[in-house]
Length: 168
Image (cartoon, rainbow, N blue to C red):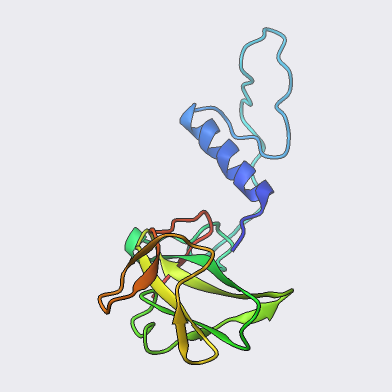
């Protein structure tokens, strides 16, 4: 999920203005003052609008990034493997059944790829299964750890991101 730049800017302006106990001006500049001091809006005209809402936050709520504890955050991450095999599947610790149930990669512009959501700041061990039988480490990731069976797993340090989702 991407937050529009204008919304982020408006939130930042609002936060800075509130932190300084000054009026908030979003999308307009306050009038100039003759004495050089801060603008005092006096008594602004009454608002003619009304509104209601549930105040929900979360992905798709339109209120910015979802709010959740780090343990519930997930980050999108794209795994890639060079072309060559006729099929590539991702297996690993990224999901409770990730070692037994693989995630197929799709061939895009000569590279196998898949985007999965990884738990916030949790290390991941993984391998690719080529053509349904050949388990290999990631040729794009030199970081490897013992797999406990006399081989190696590819290792990805915990991932954090700016655009997370909250798991349920």
